[in-house]
Length: 143
Image (cartoon, rainbow, N blue to C red; front, top):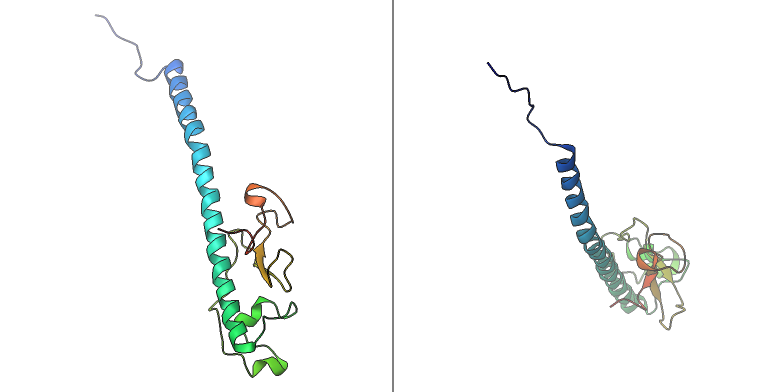
């Protein structure tokens, strides 16, 4: 009577081959996936900035000027206090969008990049300058 004591299962070499194949697939697909994420961030920022810029133009039609730096973008949602409230015909936006990293969009009046006003985000690092996701995006450089 002969007994077979071999256990069924994978050998260490077979497991290592599977891990190497998975790592190679990840290395090939990863950069493409991250590039798509950055493209999605840029598209969302451009869409949000255009929406806020359009609301600012409607505000200007009613009030004959853009909101001051002190008033900021909140004046697109809630009426200003003082003498500017009489001409306010808003809300011009239902809610203020946040950038893809959860920060509110920034506003500058007057603009410094050749625009009357600027709506912008400082990117994921929330600091001036940068590359990739850290890049500053505003109505002066969106497509």
